[in-house]
Amino acid sequence: MPKSNPVFFWEADCELEVRNIAFSFQTEDVKRGNIKTRVFHADWLRDGEVIWNPSARLKGWLKAQASVLRPSYTEQIAGGVKAYPADGGYDSISIGKVSELVGGDSPPAPESEYELPKGMPFPHKRFIMVKSERGGTRSTTTYWVTLPNAITVKLKIVSFARSISPETVKELLEKLGDKVGLGDKYSTGQYGLFRLKKFKAKSERLNI
Image (tube, rainbow, N blue to C red; front, side):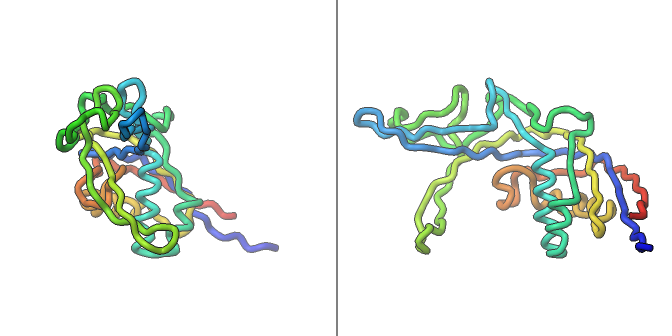
């Protein structure tokens, strides 16, 4: 007779207050007559509304941070931990308007060399070096804007990963949320930082 092994299933309602979320742009250089224009694309902008997916961002955050503590957590969180909107609504939600976004310096003249979505401030920019496919390095420019307002998101975390306890997840959120943020540019240490406002978990043991 096969031996049953205990499997722990748990779910938790959590509430996060997130601030200063960064949003990156994709760019392309388009030749228009004798002028080369850098066109900015924002797949997170829809009809003047800033669209964000906190469920996917939190799942990625948990996977990245837990793997630092224990590499074996990476696979378990990837397959056994899910995040959903607490109200059962859409994953991607509107969290602000384009008029609320904050950018960096004004664009250098002439402005015809840049094309931004309507109402968008000129973004922050930074020159970085990246590795090329041939093994060398090349320079590129990254662009982003921020939504400085603090927003509150309510999510449900569900887990059937054997080694991931609700206590582990809660401690990660409490201790690292104000050091490593959600969203783009999180590695800089100042964007998308958050505070855990609520974490209420319930679990059950399944003998499978």
